[in-house]
Length: 418
Ligand code: TTP
Ligand code: MG
Image (cartoon, rainbow, N blue to C red):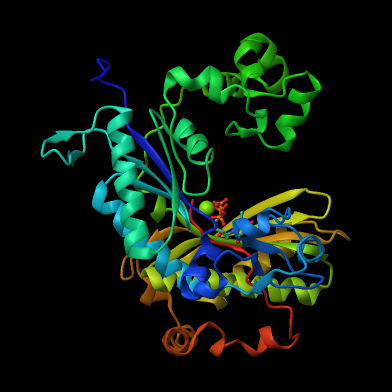
């Protein structure tokens, strides 16, 4: 038992090749074969692929044409978001059975705080989890339950904090289980590339690399002064702590309720105003459906646009009343795009629509502001949801989304919740 009362047992669980693994489960004839989820063709992007396809170099977010060249014999499937969301919820219920302290990070990953959770060990004793070895035992149980009930494999990292747990879950994918204690930091963390540190994106990594700081170990040894000269004082403190394997952020169970967003990267920049508008409507539709599915309404609409030169814009607008309707969300997103972003002649590489300020239905005063047209739209949206649930994802598509066949894609990271 550790003597430090603050020591924690944190797990990070991430499903292996999630969408692809679900498809293999649904059709076992696909097992052992290269499988790519995404739409083929010039504008398509890979959502994910099976580990068999990864051997050929195929990766998430890669243009489909590149993937087709690397792995010409792969099977392609368009993706079925509703199914993946259902599986994601089922897995979340398994995790919440183990501990109430679950922080979902995306559709297929979550943090769990297992500190002090009671575990029944096979030899019959019941005790509160206190060591990383207790965490390993619980991780094995979770993996076994997910395999038995969902026919899927997960990779788990066990560590004293979120950062180390997240790094650990990625170390032996697929079907991995890695325990990463503070004492493992020099040998296992320090050799990793500097961009594995949270908060190091391309913009921070570049000056660090230019200064010869290419690994996490280099950061740990650089000293605060030298780091601060490159990335500023606050970032230097943050990166220094992470590089030593220190991270005290708690597992945040309220995270899920904060926002819902949907974004997509396009293999080829969208230039045509009509294509951009259609993409906005698609994203707004997805977000509105996710809201209705969760029984929530949202107060604030967010728009994210990344242009071909990697400039990223994020803008938000708060509505007079909360909504769960695509029409209302897309109207706000259009206004943000028109009035608050100067696209100029640049093409759109990434487009995201999100909502925050989430409220359960009936809270606030939505009906006070809701006019007859909005009520009709609300009834239509719910009827469409019901039809889709019965007939499948593609059964109902807005006329607006049909006028250019072949441009509708599901290669997206969705629904991301942060
Ligand atoms: P990931 O966990 O990043 O990927 P993965 O589960 O497919 O594979 P891994 O074994 O490496 O964890 O993302 C989870 C799902 O999110 C993935 O199955 C598909 C979707 N996704 C996209 O649609 N686009 C993307 O660019 C990424 C990274 C993921
Ligand atoms: Mg995954």
